[in-house]
Image (cartoon, rainbow, N blue to C red; front, top):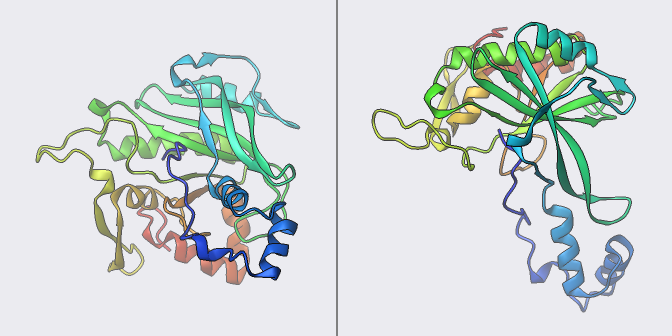
Length: 283
């Protein structure tokens, strides 16, 4: 999982999309995009559609005392994790994103945290984001967690049971005990990080496609998907397919938020369907 979005996604936006002879379209451009020049409109479309980018020096992580976001203090949860052998570090990154209020791309500093499971060798880099909505569109208050990368060194890769333990520890300290509803991130199988070479010489298993087993019915899924996406779905993440994304956005839910969804008959049915590929959540 990685937030190093390197490609903009324009979804087929072409020159015929905004014909200059169409008065209604020209007025729409001026009203919604603030411009009646085609080149400016195209640039604005790129600015809007280009996903957020985050740059930070991952080797400049440092230890710190208090863990706070706007209005919330997670210091005790940080200390609880540290008492259980987890190292928590931080650094400052620069986030580049489209701001709807300013109608332009802006850059701002953002704190990036690292959950380093020394015992298993896996670590998660993440940020806190305020959220007013849940997965089903209901209004909520509080933070959610954006996971940018989950990784370990190549010589320690391939131990799914250890990754599972690390995710359980992260969920326990930073979702369940902290009262955070969920964490989310994009699945990016082809990134800058090294992958352990398999005995057959395969260099990047993450991008290979395979049908995933439905643990409720025992049958395979109708369509194939990336093996990296399959890995996370087997470990209890859900893929709601909220948008037509090139890189799937997946979610790991807290126990409390999961219970809240399951109380609703319709939403509960939806969530059970989402969890059908989880090896550990058989319904």
